[in-house]
Each structure stands twice: as C-alpha cells, then as structure tokens.
Image 1 (cartoon, rainbow, N blue to C red):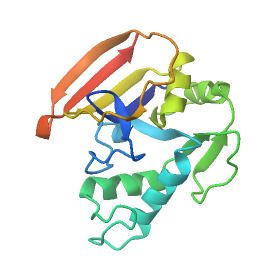
Image 2: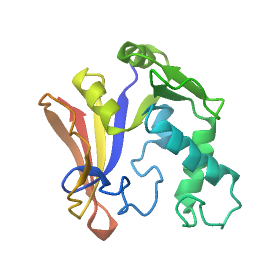
Image 3: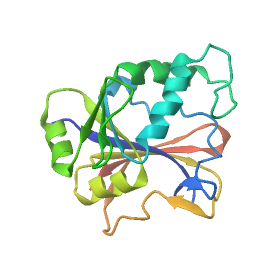
Image 4: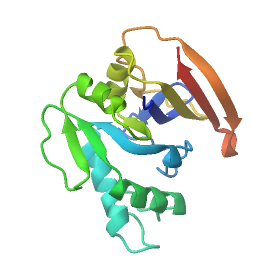
Length: 192
C-alpha cells in the first residue's frame, strides 16, 4: 500500500502561518523533505489549493531570474524544480465546493474514503501538503503514515497551528533527526 506522507515547515511553537496569514519566516517553498523521487501524487485541501495553483503556475509561466509576482522574490532553483514536478504530477484536492482547476492533472475528491482508496491504488507514495484542517482530518482518520517537519528556530506566537484542530492524541515514532542550516531541524516521524 502507498504511504501518505505529510510535510510542513513550522515554527518551534507549531505554527504553519503567522498572524498575517502566511509563514513569513520561510525563504523558499521548495520541496525540502526529500520526497520528490518517492512520490507520484499530491493531496491538498480545498482552502489551500487555489493559492498553491496560483503560486506554482506563476513560477512555471515566469521568465527565469524574474521576481515572483506574489512574493517579489526570485524563485530559487529548488522552487523551479518543484514547479516542473508539480506541473506533471497528479494533484487531488479534498473539497466539497471546488469543481475546477487550471491544471489538467488536478482531480477533486469529496470524502476521506476517496483518499483511503487512493492509497490502495498502485504507485509511489502520496505527499500531503496541507493545509491544517485536512491534515488533522487525515490524522484523526488514521490515514497518515508519516510526518516530516522542518522546524524553524523562532516562536511565531499568534497564527495558525498545524495541529490546532485535531481532537485526539496521536503517538508518533521518531525515525530521523537532522540539523539543517540556520538552526532549522528536520524531523521524520512514523505514525504510531
């Protein structure tokens, strides 16, 4: 069976967004979890998908070396690599309201059972990229297999917590800890 692997960049106090509605402490939105060769599908929630599609489409369409229209920053090489990967990789959006997407590789799923069925199909692992609500739902439904976090050495304070909506305690098994640049830490957990 395919594994469902969630990956998030979080503050040390577990926030994925600051009070302004985004993680201003993250310099680049590249896939930094070592998953690209291991996955062949991505899952997102309906609230996150429109901004995700807009962000990565802008990188795909933008001239190399030009600032991103949403951030004003020039995309780093790893973001360009993810933009190419994302353009050809199936994306599944869990939503009861969204029905259309610009990307032809995007499909919509309506229930958690649809995601359980995706895990049963042949293929590589599946990357759960968020947001917080879908992550909590999949965690509570025991559909997540692994959690990869990159923890930034800062306290965000107010903002959206990654696990703010989960209502259950979940045991995790630490599989790997790796120090990264600038005091960040990569953590990989298997779901208990």
